[in-house]
Length: 111
Image: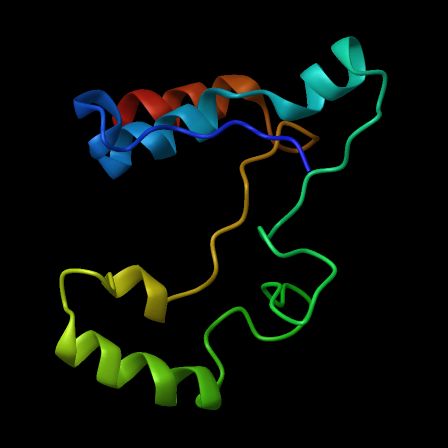
């Protein structure tokens, strides 16, 4: 696996909005097509192709068994378990039609 990682210990990358904006600004589809000759496929989970991968084919929210694990952790460590964990799984921004880089850059600027 190859990828870009941001050092969140640096002040610039501590803000999750900055990291999200960079995700919107990166045109993965263009880079893959023009620079990498379609060698790569975008993954939806750090643990793709394993039992630990995020399930994008099924429910996009945590399952009952996952909630059973997450809720006590949220109560005990609220600073480490963000509310976003209980919502829908995020999907990487795309510039494939009907998406566009321009729309993604507008979203990035708004953040």
